[in-house]
Image 1 (spheres, rainbow, N blue to C red):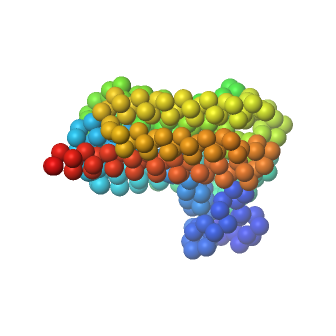
Image 2: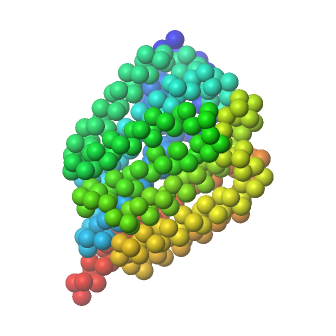
Image 3: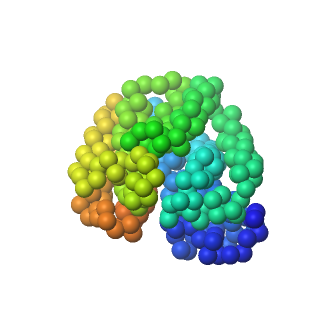
Length: 320
């Protein structure tokens, strides 16, 4: 039953916003493919994109550039959207039997029969090719560094079957852009992007642990690994520690890159937002977990705007 299914009860995805644009505006034949690529849940695009934008703008701060390269920002946005779609489709293809037995994921396009495995493979190839077209606009080291991330992407769906900390593998894969963005500007790596990357990995482990609490009962029954299960009732303490270390590393990355006061103020505001997540987290309430997970988009926006403001204010100060 390919994309023409009209059974909205079957098509509904549990954690998609009720007013998402796919369900409201997309042509019905396109909807299963857009859902396969998670375009009805754009939070993942943002969370994949921000490490790229942070790294790019941090490199531009270090280079005393007055404004971010808009073309690179656009390229990273297209690349994040396409590669997130490709990665999610690959993950769903590998996990289709598991997803069919999990309440939150059983209505995804592949386990519900809206898209066949062959159609999913075609979608993966098409979206990956878009990512490749984006990638060839960068320097050679950026291209090869980005391609290297595919090893982690390929490994992630199997991590939950083998280890108790699959969120670590996700963090390593999902934040590779924290290295790529810097190299796109500088042409080589340095300690600032490496420190930024480690901080982003810790951030991802934290927010994905919150997200994973929605599935912990099903994961336990299926024998799958999860930091939600591993941390259990101590999740608030662990996530708080992960977030705290992430913020310290982001501050250190800024210092290594020569960032200025406005960036450090932005990261301080981010710490307050992350503290709100932790202090109000209720791991027994799926809606509470989902809202705090999604709020990490605000974290990404604040750090990015802090870096842009840093660049612009430093340039204006240099003119005076």
